[in-house]
Length: 364
Image 1 (cartoon, rainbow, N blue to C red):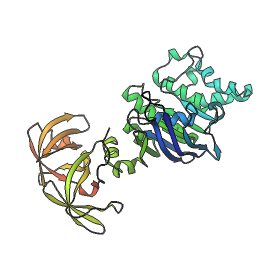
Image 2 (cartoon, rainbow, N blue to C red; image 1 turned 135 degrees about the vertical axis):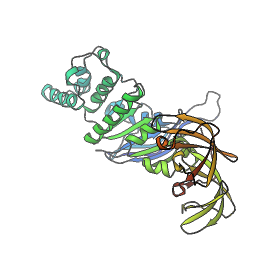
Image 3 (spheres, rainbow, N blue to C red; image 1 turned 30 degrees about the vertical axis):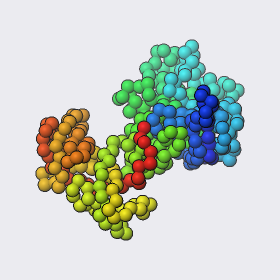
Image 4 (cartoon, one colour; image 1 turned 90 degrees about the vertical axis):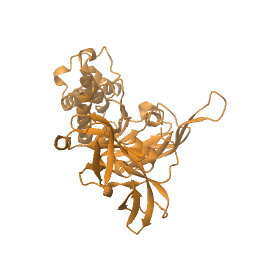
């Protein structure tokens, strides 16, 4: 298992207009601990794929340093980095069987035939591909092709494994199944991994650590729980799941708590020592849709303006005075489905509310 480090890494491209260079990645500093699976998450064009390609050796940083273990590999050719990669398109050789696709990398390394056969068989067994080892890729389903691509990447026993949106070509149900399988295999092998996706659910399900990127820069690094429950800014809160930004006024600040006036109701929330607010100032609060609960005795009167039934839950757009919000009801089997125009009482789980620093960026 190897440690990976990005140290103040930039990647710039010249502007066609002759003006300032365009940053694809700006001052990226990131540590990936041995055996961790770290996900780069963000909108298109944020720099996540460029970051992955720089670790793979397909792009060269404009400045900064990249390390695998104690070795700097910033300018090392891709074939000398001991990195395995699973591509979005799988990139299997169409004229080679499953067995030969998996064995290809070992043949390039001139592994002895006896060792090559043993390692290929072990990986085919791990990926449950033995029954189809003589098939061509065209005779495989999307999920099977994805497993072959993963088998080919891990059979060489790389120090680092890279994933470039490997599940994006699969249907929703198979994508969820393969996501879980991929995570099990990565944990079993213990290979340090960097994974690129734009799917928030995927990132939360498989990651030890999530890196949120926007406009070529890292916005926040943390566990899925930290990123979701304690977002660093408006962009992270809005990108990682759904978030209602509800305006409130600071009424009182104490050592451990803050009293807010929110939607004409006074509530108390936990104080974040890293944020400093003055009494009387206006703030944005993150109220996730699941923080609301239907309660006939609730303090908040809402009007339903939209209803979306999604099987395991019902999602509502609601009007609360001059503010709108999203409310998710996981108890709709007991509560019933409220129609548009219904007036409902809600209770707010204030212990989960997070106050945000002043808005400094425009969400993408």
